[in-house]
Image (cartoon, rainbow, N blue to C red; front, side):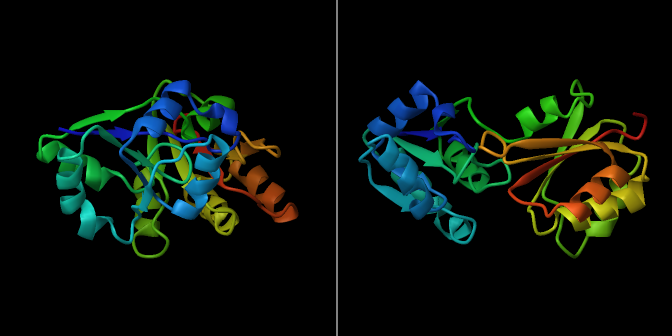
Amino acid sequence: MGILYVVPTPIGNLEDITMRALRILREADFILAEDTRTSSKLLKHFDIQVPAYSHHKFNEHKTVGSLAERIRNCEHHVALISDAGTPAISDPGFLLVRECVHNGVDVQCLPGATAFVPALVSSALPSDKFVFEGFLPQKKGRQTRLNALKDEERTIVFYESPYRVLKTLTQLKEVFGEERQAAAVREISKLHEECVRGTLAELVAHFTANEPRGEFVLIVGGAQE
């Protein structure tokens, strides 16, 4: 019976991949990748010559059943990767993991890169207790979710794209209050990595004056901070 390995990949610097991850990828029967075009750069860099197939949010609902059966019957193991970071953390992967477990397939997740941990630590906000929200709803339910989080006492972690980060920070300021402490961390593990710390009002002012670029992790202090 095969094994499904969930393999984190670098979110920036390619040196962040682990030796174990490289071995698992090289020994896999095949690799499931969020975007084979993106993953091909990583695989080529490390000379990993294993077949890779697409497994993304647009097809995973339809394919998890057949994939779980295929993994169950494979000779060795299958590796699941996303474009960057750990699969199933705001990326495709959860449905396949669940289906494999339901079908008796052993699932092992390797430790490795994920964006919110270094962002949380570098924010200098309390990290002993926190909640991970990932991406807020883009339209329906967005305001309701923000209102529900207003009185959350733990540090809150969000993911956001550069195209919506100013809008999100502005909404957070309006709902949570302009004096709430926060940090915006972008381009983690890349050449232009940056952590901007301050109140929500200060972050709004900063990114009004400086165009947001790169993928963001927003860290917001709890209501009692």
